[in-house]
Image 1: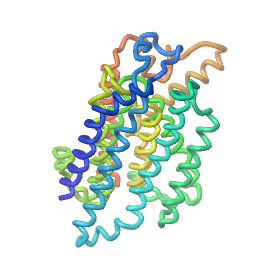
Image 2: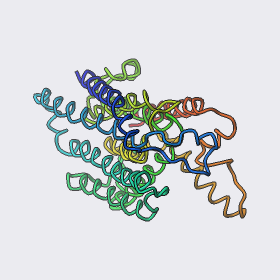
Image 3: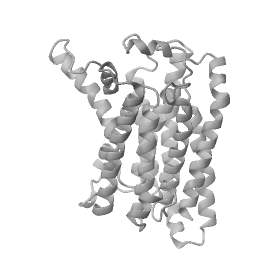
Image 4: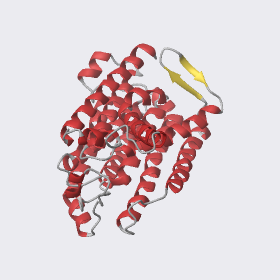
Length: 357
């Protein structure tokens, strides 16, 4: 029954997002919300100038509707299940505060896109403005968790629960802001961020079931139909994310007819944090978010190397997906390879949870 609701959430999210593209893309064209391509990027990206941006609104709406429909309905229908009563407290807060976390970052992204597209300021919000707003959103999310009974403990595979005390909240805030920006750096070529985060959401859905008592083999065979016994709400949320991103990729795969913009990429950054923190397993951001770390790591290495060597570059261009572009990889190949790497990280995460939690 739980898996059926996951399937319902995914189908609703997919349908709404995919259908929205039919009128959303022409609307963005009509109001001239087109992408401005920066001069320092690969030269062949110039042909993408004017492609509608801020398309992340499409999957944001799909995710919201699917979650608001599926999660409360599931709880209502399963109200006779004793377990469900425990999930309506802290777990419910994690689900809906997680949605608000993603929405908060999506709003920051919208402001950034609005300044770039409407005000014609190509750099958008300043770095200082972004960081202040991002830490405020992270603090609000963590405060909601704390006030609902959350503690400074986290699960680490093969170690168990570790109590970090007050340091947990500080580390969590920095980690959330770091991950959100890492996901944002992953958005640079057609379909990349959407495809990588799609697999992130799928594996979060699988892992949410492994945290319960569902067999490993059944989960692999029936990603959606597997019973999600312990983190049901998080599983439904992950299903909504995966379904909606699949719907968005209908329009975003190369050659892209719409870009998600910072509206979408920052929302996704908040979403991946909401999923892992919601399962009390933020440690999984390391293997499952390996592409995000590669992207932001390449930027940090490039800047550091550039300064230390007085102008030399470690990569042809950063983030690293642009380096591979300049090495001759086409956008489809980069999406496939990066998605496969994410799948490897997902399998590693499942094994950690299955054997170590």
